[in-house]
Amino acid sequence: MAVGVHKLVTAAEAVARFVTPGAVVGMGGQNINRCPMALVHEVARQGLGDLAVVGCNLSVPLDILVACGLVARTEHGSGNLERYGTLFAWRRAAEAGSIEVRDHSHLAMATRFAAGAIGVPFMPTRSLLGTDVLRGLIDLDIARLMDFDGQPIVLMRALTPDVSLIHVHQADPLGNAVIEGVTSHEVDMVRASRATIISAEEIVPPGSLGERPERVTISEAYVSAVVHQPYGAYPTSAYRRYDFAEDEIKAYQAVARAGGAEFDHWIRRYVLEPERFDDYLDLRDPDAVRRLAMSSSMRSML
Amino acid sequence: MSQLTSDQTGRQQATRAEICVAACADTWIGAGEVLASPIGIVPAVGARLARLTSAPDLVMSDGEALLIMDVPKLGATGSDVGVIEGWLPYRRVFDIVAAGRRQVMMGASQIDRYGNQNISAIGDWRHPAFQLIGVRGAPGNTVNHRTDYWVPRHSRRVFVERVDVVSGVGHDRARANGAAAARYHDVRVVVTDLAVLDFATPDRSMRLRSVHPGVTVEQVQLATGFPLVVEDVTETRLPNADELHLIRDVIDPAGLRNRELPS
Image (cartoon, rainbow over all chains, first blue to last red; front, top):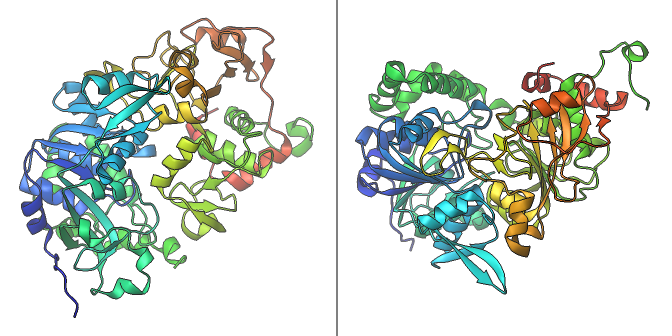
């Protein structure tokens, strides 16, 4: 007899239940790849503020939350969209002192998540030796400099987010999830988190991942809620499903760079006002031209 | 093949960007079978050129998760990347970094005479006057494996007496932090739009190795906010006709290199 807890809910239900004001939010995805855009739009719509957003290469989902005034602190290795530039709302807020930025390096963040994932209080690393970043992190009691066999070694404090948000390719209703292509820091991050919300391109029947169980990237044991959301990473990419939507990324960067009333209007019109993520997709990509056009070269690999 | 002139081939002489590509490519000579991680367009063209010429052992990825056997043109995705030989998700890159089986060329918002690099912030790390991109991989890269830098606009804003937030570790900082920091530290070359610089001096301070054709030593020193070690400066080599063909027709037919570094 098949048993298990079915966790399939709407984004609104999942976010209302597992994201609280003041939470440490683990952000999945990397720059223009598989960011949990649908879940982040929902957090913004519900206005859950005072968040600490943590991850490796934080990109447009962080920028949207900052633009909505919901972020108190970021911990990361970078805040950027690679060739499309820095995150502008994040940068403005950092320079204005309205958010606290704790710039760690990608490796230091991955090290902290790895410690959290295996339940130890810290993880040693050679990284950060000789940098000014280390001094800052020591002041914040996030890192310690120790001696091992007469040599300095850095201990990074474990990071255990209150809730992580990630977007995956496939999930069953119990939360067993498959990520194809790049898995970033997020596998360790999820294992370190108290709760995790997954949005998935595709929901598959319970037990259907059993044919190739080694493909299951994240076990249901780590997953709190599952949301079905095709194109849930748009305008970032989902490997072998759809490429990133360059026009949309550029449009966002242009309006975010400009800031002011124009940017506020954009956030209101496309993030806060649409009732569901599908409404945003239809507004920004009527007839799904961008979503479908970007799939052709990837489809040829299937 | 000998140096190229437009008369022999009927093609344009090497652009500044192409000279920089060749200089970047030369940083990978002798790297062996390591993961090549070039950040930026000119370094990316350079690494691919090296793999096709002087450093065929380099392990390269498609920039996402695949290790690729072919050398695709810049910007290729999906089936355009050619033959796939393996899978390297981002998390595993950290294990490769820690094991040192990697060589990277990164950017620098600021760099000092000992190769300390800053991409974190201008001003204080806690209270930045100007928030930069973030330290990314710089701390781990510089203490674990060879790291070179690419600076597309050589200026006193970049080449400074003292960087605001040391992100990538320079030679003095590595020395001061014992064998744990210094053992695998290998910051070797800085390629800019004007010159190639290195740290081949007794105290590991920055030396002007070569100037690009048409650039003077004085010009480089004027654009640098600290005194460079200047002795036996040569002229940066030109890419040969084979290399120009690979750069222009195979690796970067869209000419992205000339957008990062206009001639």
